[in-house]
Length: 285
Image 1 (cartoon, rainbow, N blue to C red):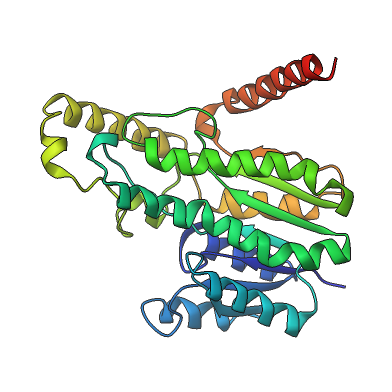
Image 2 (image 1 turned 120 degrees about the vertical axis):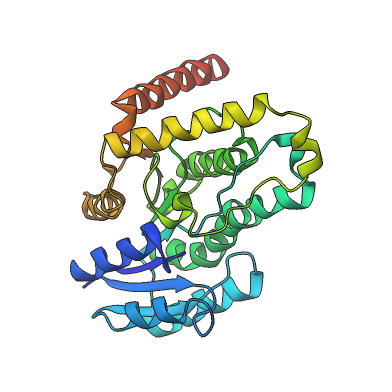
């Protein structure tokens, strides 16, 4: 029996590529996106034309929208084997130059959006005693960078809940994995999609010219590395397929896919796990 896979944020980027990749592999894919009869109508029609794909309207910032999308999917297909939380919001700016409301936007999409999908899908997964949930976070999944503090804070939060859920859901045979993508040339990074950038321009001006020079240098470095390593977004879609097809119980908690890091991300993940084990042994002793 084929797996039923629900993906959020499929109108562009990783989500769209993953939908196409998994459908070609023979899986039934529920492709979630906002405004399928509005601004994303073209993308919705494109994906709907593919075999094994059904496009559904979902806004992860809206409780009733999430509940409705998952209920309809479960009523129609009877199960959701895999949930891929790909919908995300990026942006840049000085922390002081962000209004509180602008920072909240990051968390509504990147953090609370994932909480909503978990709470919508977990009852059925617990009943089936089976499931896989894959959350896309960031290549900087446990450290921060200038001008990315609010964005990365929302992604760190996903790392935290995924790690805690790994133990909480173990009795139900539900696995959780985070993917750390690094920098890829998707619409989120190319400027095609408007970012959630700092909105208090008068504050930002007080940091110049130093802040602008620093920001431009960091940007040039990141995008230069992206070109140097020929970062292909298909890598993420292929990695998700690999995770789905791994043997049950063999999936890692964290799955970095960042060639630019040249293995340092793996070292960091392993070191963090080692220190956590040492910390836990002190409390258990």
